Image (cartoon, rainbow, N blue to C red; front, side, top):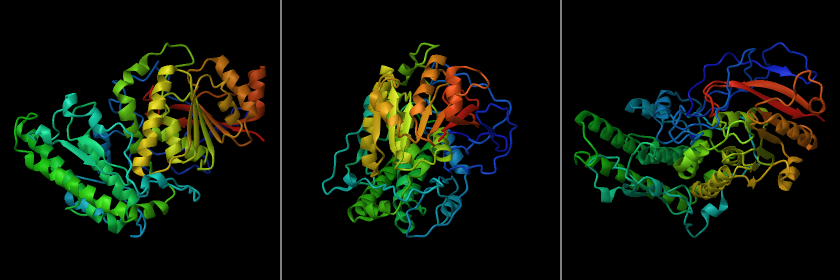
Length: 516
């Protein structure tokens, strides 16, 4: 896991200092500028109003009812048509020099002239606003002399002729749909089959987006020209072949395997992919990709989302229905924060950098932990006690490590713990040096929230705790609330619609800063 642009009021913030006086909402003089991304909504972290939309969680997000992909992924999926439509409408900005890597812009459109203009010279940076000059993005093992066999779940393992998917290009011979896709590293390529079925990996769209990400992130403007910058580029040839095939099938009412009239589009797509593979392999071999990666210190937001979507679609999506098996009314209700919400937490509220420590208490299938490690490069810890979620999290972490190697990106250290975070020794020890802690406590019992307050007494000054329920309960007089008042300064914010998995509505969240 795409998100639509939220309908939100002008940004404002209500700050509640724990003296528990009711403050009047006022406009923030330092409202943070949102991090831009082709697939993300604007940052709404500082928008607060006196009335909040209701956002009571369901027992678990039902993937069939989410307004996203059928996989219920928190990141944009290759098969999501809403993402593709939104990308076509975006404009480009920010000129860059030919010698710098081409930070991405998702501005592809149907009109050839518009695409030509959008992909030449003017780019919008989709990276974080703050800089972390100490982060080193390149994964050294990804560029070793000997090519590595990636220990990944290949796309063809899940979406293939043998799994009941017809060819994506009607009339394409089934025995010819197998292809390989080279990543910007010395690892061996991933296996795909050019097939299509809803709720499966969309191979054609996945490959096109992969080519675009490689060109925009790993190459200079000059190097990227054969990839995306003209009408005969690899990306444009793939786009034209897939569009022509789609339009032809709609016009002629064809059915899969019912005609060979589209074999030309199929061969054109494969030829463009073959050209891409050869060209990127040459740039890896001559050291260009390594040199370009050494010049950058951030991973673009849309590339982060794409990599995490690849991981999720190959590990969680095939069995996502099992996440619904939760009993209501307890501490173990499942629900996810979507990628832009997490991005706001990491950037606007915490100013996380690669030398800091992030922690997710109740980390579910590990989405937020992995996003922090990839997007920020920081040490990222998670703790979960539900066995099924832990199994998914471990599967994701394994695929995540292998895919980061495939993409040549070095993430931060990921540590996933099983068990109760109230008693886990590693979690309790790491808590003392954490810089940002996420607690999705929307459905936690009062007893568990009270236990968390006592744990937070050990936090270092300045540590940020982001929660969906405040740990400071107004003027209520009791021991736990007195502790919370004494250790935290609390700000109240509002998140946008579609930022959580259990509700389309927006709602409140809280940023508690540990006092000195």
